[in-house]
Amino acid sequence: MSLLELSQLCARHQPSGLNTTFGDATLSFDKYLLATQRMLSQAHTKLGTENAVAVVSGNMPFLREPARCDGAQHPYKRGILLTHGLTDSPYFMRHLADFFVSQGYLVMAILLPGHGTQPGDLLEVTWQEWAKAVAYGADRLAEQVDEVYLGGFSTGATLSIHQSQHDARVRGLFLYSPALKITPRAAYAKLHKLYSCLLPKTKWVSIQPDIDCYKYESFTMNGAAQMYALTQRVAAAELTLQIPVFAAASEDDVTVDTLATIDLMSRARHPASHLLIYSTTPEISATKHPDAHITWLYSVFPEHRIIGSSHLSIVLPAYDEYYGVQGNYVNCNHYYPHELDKYIACRTHPREVVFGEISAANLQTGLIQRLMYNPGYEQLCSAMQYFITSLAAY
Picture 1 (cartoon, rainbow, N blue to C red):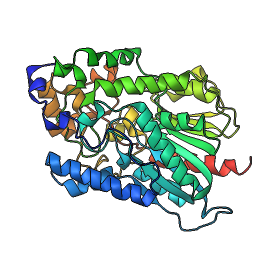
Picture 2 (picture 1 turned 30 degrees about the horizontal axis):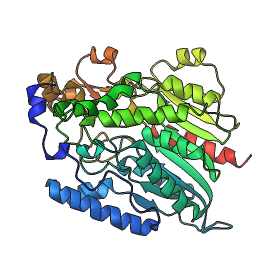
Picture 3 (picture 1 turned 180 degrees about the horizontal axis):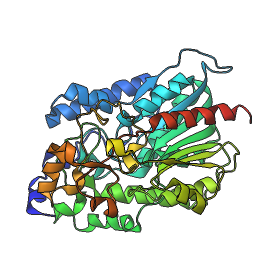
Picture 4 (picture 1 turned 135 degrees about the horizontal axis):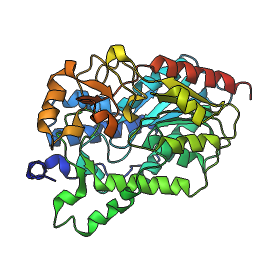
């Protein structure tokens, strides 16, 4: 870590004291929303966040209701709990929520402990606290719907699987870029606690400007360690899923191992289960992995300078107002701080960049922004709709 990075350790790199553990599991969902709003407002006021009202709103958990109350035993027939990924926020689940509401689902989205406030809140959080939040959400959802479904992005997908392993109420899963396997080096991230008191920089995998309103850019060693521990816990169960599973992933993903998702889906026993994979070579990949339950989609869009999909691009459409084509945010963090000239050029010369995953091969093609949206989002929605319709046959 450079002197520049070390000098940037400041208030946001310390715990807020407000957001390390999950709160009161007996709260109604409405009261949970109010308590979370108060916590987020307090944290961002203390931090001095610009546009704090908008930032708090985007990081908030939420409830979305369908047009009809059509349940037999509860107000609604079906509902889904949506869980965001590591360093992310419920903002990333907004468009999925719109889709599920259109399909008649009651939607609840939670905020995982350590998220939505400041990166330092991931210094001490544990995956067990994340799991408590998911269990709470499942309980509140089950009070309102006949059929409980869980959906999650990345770490949220892993937490959804974990909840389904011991919750018989869960009728099905929707998994997006599921974090089932990450590098074993993350297992050693917890060792930072032995010496971080003397060397503050060792608490961090990376220090970033943190200009993203709805996702941390700086990343803690503890966050990596907790993610690894969660994946080990889920893998230890020798996972075979009997319930229907819909999954979507990028073959080019550099954050998680997409082969682990393919392996998971090969052990998903329900006949309706289906996996959608975005690939730069779909014909070749389909030959390597012949499976009728996998659909391979071409992820290259030359007319938009898109050379492939990324871990982050699955759940957001091109029209997202913050991360989409016309959005304010661009992801050039892979150049910071060691290639500041490229970082600046990536952010300020959009006509010179291509978009995709930040793989070693792609980084050799020239300036690249990490793709934050899915140009094939309509295909994703169509595939999910087909999956939902097919459930009626079983």
